[in-house]
Length: 280
Image (cartoon, rainbow, N blue to C red; front, side, top):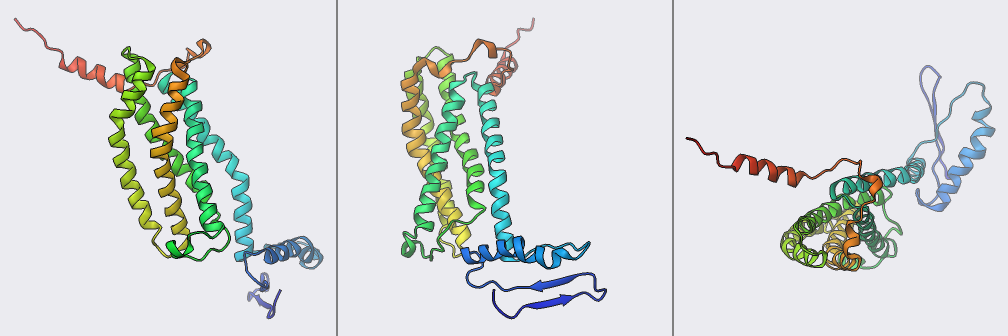
């Protein structure tokens, strides 16, 4: 720690605030060791001995440390919830157990690629001149979990859009190989246009000076670009072609699950409304 150490007491003499400046970077390893020493040894040996006294350590170092710990503890819950909900919705929508498993794997690949790019650029310090930033040796704490939720939603949007077309062709008797080829071909322009717009918008964030927003923009832009090209344009059709009719495997013991087919319901409703009626 460093001097000066300041003590402020409220008029009622019931609350005291002690400001202890940490030496070095407030988020560096020295500050974190000092925080652990303060909480684990210094406070219990001093203020902690006063009967009925309540203590709390605040400040930039403590806040960052506690936020990191909370994020690490809650991250598995968020991952399990998002992956579980996506699996259930895809299972009910496409009546296949293979489709949701494959979708989750592909989406995790795009998210993992975004994480890798962020580490390579901002943690390892590459492209600092091109992106006009100075690396602080890490990625902002809140970004990985935020990127996961946003990118998983965007990736799932592309995935459902493409697979809906493929499933529709397959339900009309088109073989899986041909259905995949036609489905990718008919949705390619829409997916590419949407991805181009999002990449352009996210790239603007990468030009800003704030390092947090710059990391967010780079992560989102790279992830959407990879997802719309390598993942949806190469890996998805390749995996579906290799699996063939196994793409639509649905165990008989899951037949009791409800069906979610919004497009079919809309087509049926439109057909009923458009049916001509003869009047004598």
